[in-house]
Image (tube, rainbow, N blue to C red):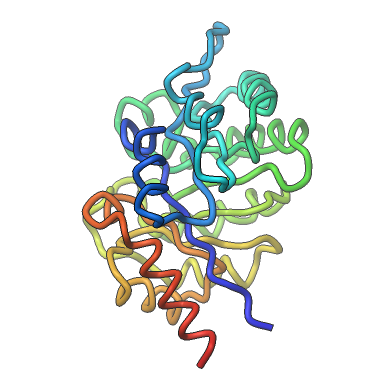
Length: 245
């Protein structure tokens, strides 16, 4: 039986908001699920961003939306994950890929990839408080070099996430370098959960190249959806047609 290709909108700061969700709904070009822009987790308890929460509470699309957290302290990540789950949230996504220097300096986002011990503690804390089906991870291949992923992936796998999205570049590579699909293919063969590929998916040709090279369960699209918000309906049609052949 053919499994449909999952499509997701990437969490983009100041972009993946309620207004953009409404735009995609109006254009009838919806991914299968959304992830919010990140909520910053800090030690001193503060109110979750009302602006970002609107994407969850007023989600008009009928598609699941996950709240994303960026932070590194296990107890506070767990606290904020439980707070998010009090809303109409499909689950919580841990950001282990943001390359922004201000985030990485705080050992959050992509900065987490520099410490396997810290990553292990954060993943464990979230898995402990989130129900089955509600814990997802978005990560990069490493901080400096892609081969760091050989040590990173087993740590992620040990906490049984429900889905893992891999931006197939390192933090240092940012958004400019070629992607490394061979590592996503390896992860898809190792992990028991669905693996979603992210990075440089801009049209049908690049989407199909990812599927051919890495065999992921899904694709996550970011900036290309701003240039062409119809990309989700186009890719759904393309993969549906291929499945029918």
